[in-house]
Amino acid sequence: MAIDLEALIEKNVSKLGYELVDFEIINRGELLRIFIDKPSSITIDDCVDVTNQLKHILTVEEDISFDRLEVSSPGIDRVIKKLKDFERFKGKKIKIKTRSPIEERKNFKGILQGTKEDLILIEFNNILVEIKLDNIEKARLEPDF
Image (cartoon, rainbow, N blue to C red; front, top):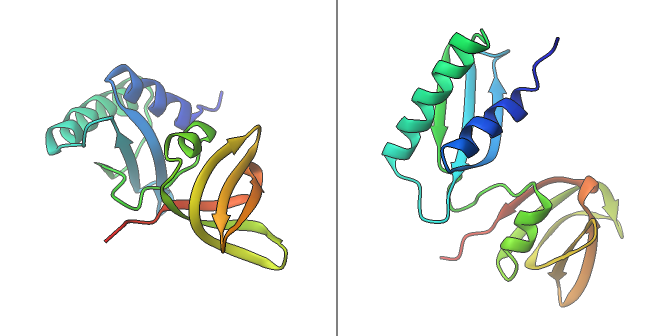
């Protein structure tokens, strides 16, 4: 029986009061990198708590092998994947790269205008562009400096 690693991590991170933003498996499983968030900012202690919990769950209970586990905040240019997050960050600057071109372009930088069903709305060059969630290859917040 194959384990849904993302669901397992998300369940355990949520139990601790955090949101799983993203995770990566690097070098064929040698490194497991996890990004967590919460309404207030993430601290080193938060990362340590999640690391300790996940190390126990993954190695002892599920026998998942990895050489290193990294847990960190998503950073100011956080990845956005979930529909609810596109709504949560409405009004923020965002960069979106699509899988398939929309009007001959794949890269959009603008102001996130929220969602409409499975569409992400972004104001790009003073035009409202609708992008299907499943057409988004990568979306990140664009920090204000």
